[in-house]
Length: 231
Image (cartoon, rainbow, N blue to C red; front, top):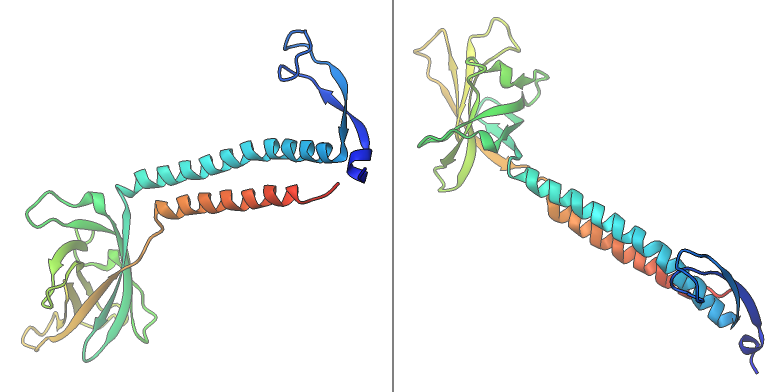
């Protein structure tokens, strides 16, 4: 007879409605049940699984719940864009964001810029949405089709050079066109440049769902590993 078969022990079981002995389910009793070490091991693993599985379900449900809330908020999302300007005399980079639920119900819809930040290369001066000469009505974002045939959202933004207080230079961004001109010398030929846009990716609810699934897989592996532990 193996050691497993010889090693009989007694375990105390807290009786509930799953172990009725002729009494009501509310009456708790104890009983001594003979079992082998193997049976005791299976019993302990089962109790461990019963302890962890509800927690796993709760955790996964909570995370999926957050993902659902995320999905609802996406319907009125804050959209972020990066943009660059390039001209014969200067270059620069910036970012802007807007609420896509605020587009006007017009033939050519526009939306107000929520925030904007822009800098010319080699210049520490930061331009924001408040630097638009017609703020707060501007700057705006609008859908357009570029000369390349590409469709995109673009800016309508006009701001003055504030790095040099005595300067009369202004910068106007409309769609893919950048115009640099003098406010005091209208006969001066403006400098033309190009503007390009790239949408900044945002996390999606799918990420939350995938995280919930991966958490479930990790917890399952942990429970499985417990079954391999010998007493």
